[in-house]
Length: 187
Figure 1: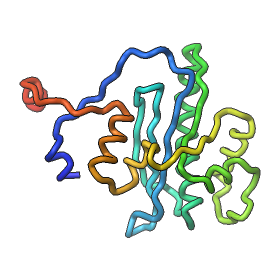
Figure 2 (figure 1 turned 90 degrees about the vertical axis):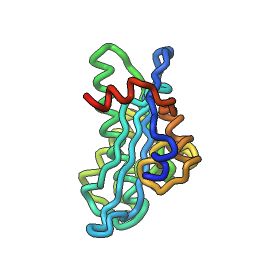
Figure 3 (figure 1 turned 120 degrees about the vertical axis):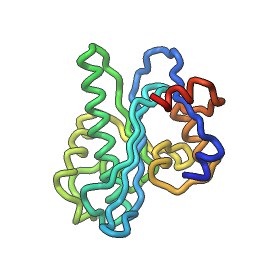
Figure 4 (figure 1 turned 60 degrees about the horizontal axis):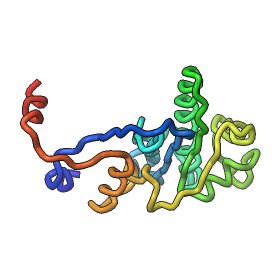
């Protein structure tokens, strides 16, 4: 991160005028047992409303996943919960955007699409709510290629090219240093 920031220290989030999007896209990803001390995994999430990033997060999972599929499913549940929350907020405003959860994990998508545990015997039952919500068509789960998964930025060691690609996808662009930067840092 230090080497990357040294080369491009100034970034800005740009919001352009856009037509009201018809859907909220929530990108999710997980790594597997990244914490060397607790063996917990990290969840990455990016919420997009059209071309605007409205929330991004990287959190340590509260539950220890016993395999990659389970960790990816927990990340999907995290994204679905936050996506349903923002969708509810928009419904309060009289807007009804669809919700899509985008993941690069085929196994987590299949676990979410069925009822019950299947072969995943150790998934905590508190996470099975997502299967009911998906069956009720409250949202869709969509497979996205790893190359296009913005949440990868929150969970993986990445090179400069991948970082730039995902930041651009989130609406974050490099800017040249301006005299206001110094004034903003002093306040």
